[in-house]
Image 1: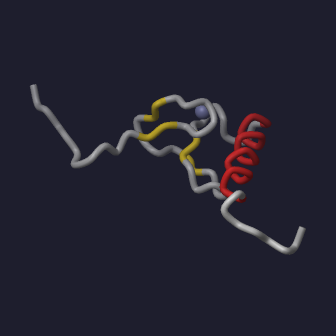
Image 2: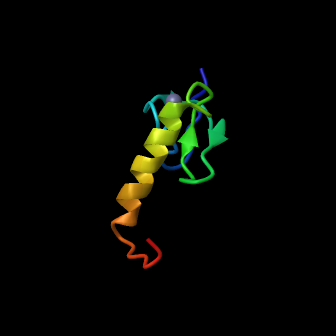
Length: 65
Ligand SMILES: [Zn+2]
């Protein structure tokens, strides 16, 4: 049996459903986070995307709103 270990913990999970992904299948362009095939393009993805952006936005103050 071969043990194949990558350096570091490169475990990837879908930012929408938190499912562990074998590999990065897709990436959300807005958040730059990995997303699985099941969640890609769904309303759930959109909602989560907004959630992530909102939490990021806390650090930014934008005068354009
Ligand atoms: Zn997912």
